[in-house]
Image (cartoon, rainbow, N blue to C red; front, side, top):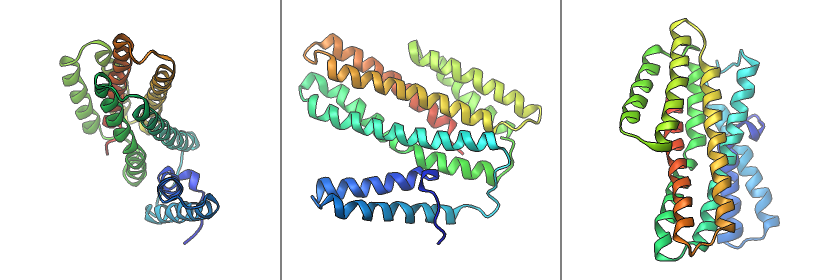
Length: 240
């Protein structure tokens, strides 16, 4: 199997990191032993993912290639940041009135962890099929978003309105026969950046807030709800 750069395959990096964590933290094996093992697993996983790609997987748009690689790296960073927040919150949020917040953070962390493989699948489909995202697919996404808008309020509705405008622009591009892949990846990148920003706010508040103050806990819950809204929108965009 040909060696490839693991950085192009965030799922492979995540797999190697998981083995390193399990070996050092749970099995208590020496890090000097686990580091080369984890590195080997990362390289092998990247080679396997490369092998599974269609032979016709070729990039004809350098800007699109850069955006895809940036999105993959950003998604992996989001997963790591979300997991770090979850572990930190689990140690600190132990009182009964804090459990709802802790549960929300854990659910969002689990949802975030599914992002890198979904993006890998999306990218393969974008290159394996036509370069122009189908009009019907965009119309279906737009319908779903508009239905959610009618049932939403507050910050969730604001995020959905922004997504609706993006989808309308992409739909116009598709109807005009334009390649919408780059626009789609930019939208995904923007949502990931927004999620990263909220995670940073949550981590800061977790470390600096008075966690016995219910009002400050409620403020963190509101941020978590906003993150949930963004992750749901992100999930819509990374579907096949």
